[in-house]
Image (cartoon, rainbow, N blue to C red; front, top):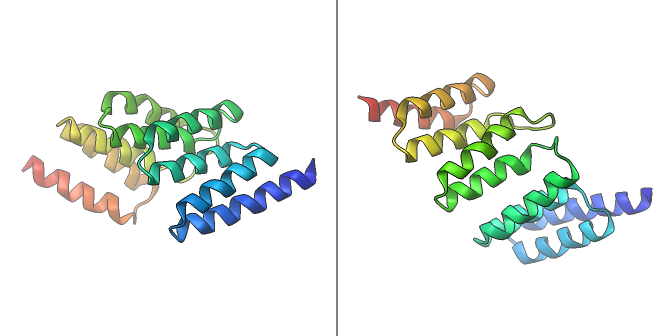
Length: 159
C-alpha cells in the first residue's frame, strides 16, 4: 500500500509539471493514473483544475466534490468550486463554497477565498462587501499584488 501511495504521489508531481508546461491532456492522464493507484483529495482537486483549464467547469466541480468526500478538511476544492461557479456566473452559489474554504482546517493559501468572494461581491455591485473581503485577504497576505490592485480598483468605484 505504501508503494502505491508513493507511486501515486510521483504521478501527481509529474502531472503538475505537465500542467504547468501547458500539456493539459497529458496532465489529465497522469492525474487519472495517480487516482487509480491511490485516490487522494489532492489528486481529484488538481484533476479538476486541469479540466477547468479546458473550460469544463462542471467536470471540475464534480471532481472537487469527490475530493471533499475523501477529505472534508482539505480546503482547496471548496475554493476551487467557488472559483468555477464564478466563471459560470453563478455568484450566489459560489458564496457558500468560498466561506467553507475560509474555515477549512487544511488550506493554503488562505487569502484566495477572500479574493474570490470579493470578486463575487464586485460582480453583484456590493462594493463595500468586496472591499471588506479584499482587506481580509490583505491581513493574511499583505504583499499580494492582485489584492492590492483589486483594492485600488474597488476604491476607485466608491469615489
